[in-house]
Image (cartoon, rainbow, N blue to C red; front, side):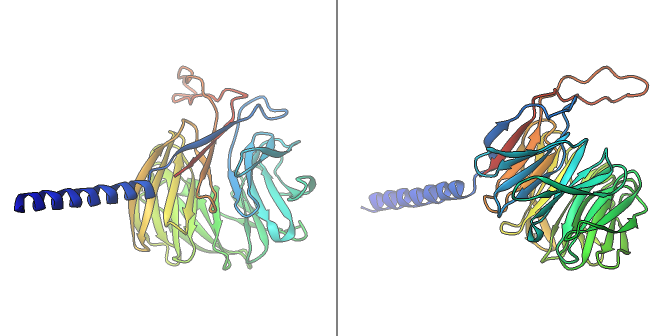
Length: 351
């Protein structure tokens, strides 16, 4: 009787543990590829080029920078909603939804292109500067900030009128930028390995902070309520977590080569960092002062740009097929693999 009772108890405990493990596995599986959407070559483009991804979770739209055009797809089905064409070399899209207007940075033209969010029709333009790259909307000042790479400046546009209201000398080459919605815009300065904090009303730089141990920073994201910034660099290849009030580096993590995007998800406390090597590094905010590595998602080579859908919790990345790297030369001792024209595609990852 004792032996039988013990065996039955042990079996019951094992079954409960097995069931609990199964529930945990079902509740928190890793990120994996959900969908792939393929598109042809960009209109009027002779090469395959892609850059920032902007997700409008509320409107269920994803804006894809694709060379000479912006492709807009449905966030749930991947269906093509429309193309914004006639551009030269687009980089990013900023959305001022309260004014029904979007802004596209065109680096080759040194302009911001204005378009209607409902019709996707171009409605105007604002002069920026050469290498107009990263672009964001700050809801506090109701201004759009265009980061001009080569001139080391930011062109500031009134979102309602579409008029340029100022230019900021950044003192370094800008990359990704984020706004805290309370009057500060933060931007990575790639060549200085610094992060600058800008007053979005006065257009003055309030602070400059070093990003060591990271260097050559590109990607930037923010946890606004907890005042945490996530800046990722290419040399050294690191993600650093900073206090957005003091600029103090709280933690750092190694990442793979060619980082070019980052995102923070408030609901889950996850930080995502995507790289050219085909990796998305995922970190978890255990507390505002402690972060840990959660998982690494294997994607595809070249999938360095990324957008986060905060409604579905899915990640959107885009890339292309790549040919082998050409032989090294004196001018190009470390040539990269070229993208094959007409092979542009979008990868959707989720749980």
